[in-house]
Image (cartoon, rainbow, N blue to C red; front, side, top):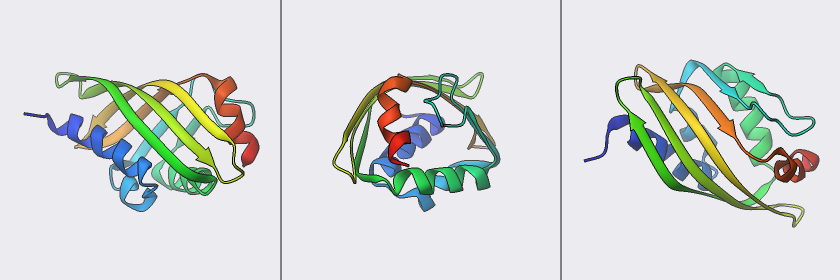
Length: 133
């Protein structure tokens, strides 16, 4: 049986793959924060608050023709309300440029919603996405 936070993480990537940002935002706490320790040039290392996340991801996902995000491993720690995932992105930008990356992300939950999301990926590969913005 899947744990609630694991189900939320699975839904997170399903909704991203569908480019369903409005429903994806329902998974976030109002005080949610995204941290990207190694951002691509021109991309913020922190996106603070649900409103800022909405603005950033609406703009980001407007650039994708197709976006597939697939979980390859998931580690759920109910004691700390944290979930760690390994996942792969395979996407196509509207300008025809392919984008792929292998990522590790850490989710922290509060009241069943995402309060922190730390995303680790190769910023050199993500640069094609930032350049398309």
